[in-house]
Amino acid sequence: MPWSHPNPLIERYAPPRMREVWSDRRRFELWLQVEVLACEAWAELGRIPVEALPKIRAASFDVDRIRSVEERVGHDMIAFLTVVNESVGMPEARYIHLGMTSSDVIDTAFALQIREAAELILADLCLLREAAATLAIAHRRTLMVGRTHGIHAEPITFGFKVAGWVAELDRAIARVGAATDEVATGKLSGAVGTHAALDPRVEEYVCGKLGLHVDAASTQVVSRDRHAAFVNSLAVAAASMERIALEIRHLQRSEVSEALEPFGEEQKGSSAMPHKRNPVLTERVCGLARVVRGYAATELENVALWHERDISHSSAERVVFPDACCLADYMAQVLTKVLAGLEVRPDNMARNLDQGGGVVYSQRVLLALVEAGHSREEAYELVQSAAHRALRGEGGFRANLEADPQVMRLIGERLPDVFDPADFLRHVDLAFDRLGLGVKTP
Image (cartoon, one colour):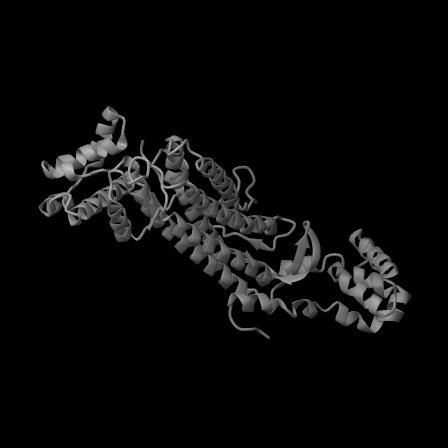
């Protein structure tokens, strides 16, 4: 059964380099690499003649031929060995796969495929992080309303919001990197992991040459908790990308219109409504995040296998790993395009910030009244009344306060400072400094 299965979405959207990592050709190349290294180790140990190595190193295969043989024998490793041995010839071919079980080759090569895929994902996540960092720095002082529960809360800056994305992407990159190191583990320990037919030095030689960890206590396979942790790291990264995409979708809503994903000159939003400018890229990211999360659950199911191994995980992994890696990488590329071309509308941000005549300053009014000697309960009722009337269209918040003699007596002179957003930005630079995002701005 091939790793590269017919998935229309993958065929259309997966980055070409990632498709190549999960191609049958690349899989067989890595299998052959493991087989050749094992022969080299056996030769160093005197188990096979050194003279056999040149022909073994020159081994080759034809992908279509392997597929043809597999259709007859129903076993991918046997089909692979049959074709490779034909290219080597006797007697040298009899030394290939000596003492090994299929999973010795498959799992060790699988670790290499995962590492190669992870390198591509990490590179694209880093590009996404840089796009977010650039956006954050550019809008460090661009005022907008902060929202909790979807409701206006207090002023923030758009750059501060994006800085949070940068921090989360940093964690995603670190998490995927750590999971990659853990899953970069091979094994050449035989049919049940006891090295009964394989000298442990063969395992150490092969994994050492490939830069892989050795599974300290393998069964017939490398234990799948490592693989589950890796796919789950992709799922968390996908969830973080979804968080960014979902935020942009909200900010692009017609009644908000604060930040819009790129829209091509000839792009169309709707077959029926020519005015539409839909957030299709960020919606795509959100949808694909759900798929990656589903794959994480599948890989968790693959951890528990019967005894020293069954094959229930194999068929699932042939779908899960190519798809999850392709989708995570594609999502990072799409979101990088979105952030690099994001249309930010500071004027609309300022307009929305002033909705209700400044209700976002309600906490500062409350604190000022308390500091002036009002009880918190009375001050809260007074401020809430002025704010809710403003939100109902009955005047503006500040105007309502200025019409209240009690408010003007207590804090009238302080109102200009209370309604100055600068105080909310006193510590905005802290997040930028912690993230290493440039110097402070005036």
